[in-house]
Image 1 (tube, chains in turn cyan, blue):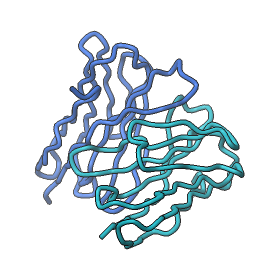
Image 2 (spheres, chains in turn cyan, green):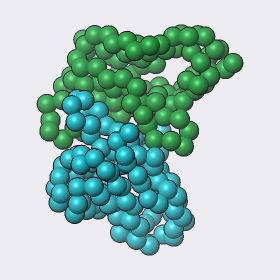
Image 3 (tube, helix red, strand yellow):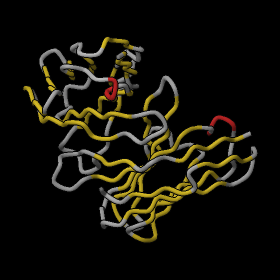
Image 4 (cartoon, chains in turn red, brown):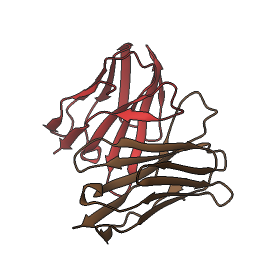
Length: 113
Length: 113
């Protein structure tokens, strides 16, 4: 168990409000990732981090920002939520010594009304 | 065209059947190939991973990679109702430091008792 928690697990918010999702890991993994999962699209990478304060964009980064001020926490922020950002969000960490395999958190179900 | 294509199904089989799940890809630079299983409302969990071409077996599961055809497969022998889930293939370049994965959209499998 790589010890990943995500909070909140469920959230309903309104269009235009800011939202922050938190991913917390307990084992000092260097690489962390944020994905969204939507029907017909599978998992798509939003942003990833390769260390404290080191982040980069994924394929669907528009409308999202991230921050990593501590190794254990990777935050995903929707500055002004839109209905198109209704999705399930997963955080993942890269497992050391296992090629590029990743271990996923339990997910956050976000609904933007 | 997506880099990784996977038939979404759903695929319905009787208990005990042999199941074949497949993905095709277009990028010949992919080196690592993975299969994840995802139960409803849960995060993806790693089933198997392979490097380059060849077969890998783990209990009732066998992963095959054919790089010449850009085709990967997951076989499940003696399928059980507990195998009912969505199966996602994923791939990476291996030589990149980012560890980014490209996912297929997933195949939903139902094993009927």
